[in-house]
Length: 289
Image (cartoon, rainbow, N blue to C red):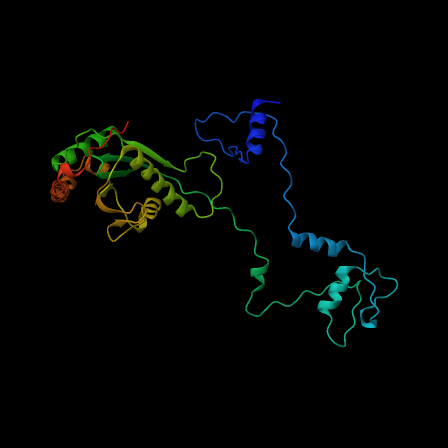
């Protein structure tokens, strides 16, 4: 008997349920192989046991003439139930006749009864680049930022008077997290919960106190997945529970001087908003590494 089986025996004796991984996470070691004991079959619910007894029970003897069946037909509980439930007054049916299906209500179409099983839903797929400025402002950008886009972002922040005390590091977030992701019930809700859980984990580990979300990229009905995941309405991301400041995609600013000029007034207002909160009132951000 392997050590894993012995450990499970001890856990069972202490009333502790042992769990085993069903899916292998990326870069995770494989589960240790051992001889697992077969779990006991789930007990049959009382209702199903009673139904099985009714189906297997011998035919009861009934003296009432209206419930008698011909001698050449073997009586069964299912046939007797059919006589009890389907016979109309003045009509006689034999147990050997096939049951007549009940009529559907007028308000219920036939397609609703025989509808085929819906195809399993697939998880939404997207990726984000994430960083935080001094533990106060969360910065998100669609996809993985290039080196040029990262340098441009730092330059824009400095031009607005936003000078982080610690150089922020960038984390790349991809959804779904598992490469062998299974079918989901609600892809949009699970994607929102996944992004919110990722940000919440960073907040807990780094001690951030987020005040605002800086989103670099377009948002709108035509943007598809990311717009629905962030769930931005009235200047608020309901997924992350943060007010949103929106700027253009960084790639559109690399070689376009006019776009940079148009962005300058908004950057000035952003810098004033940053300076309106004293650094003494905000804890220093921990290192992202």
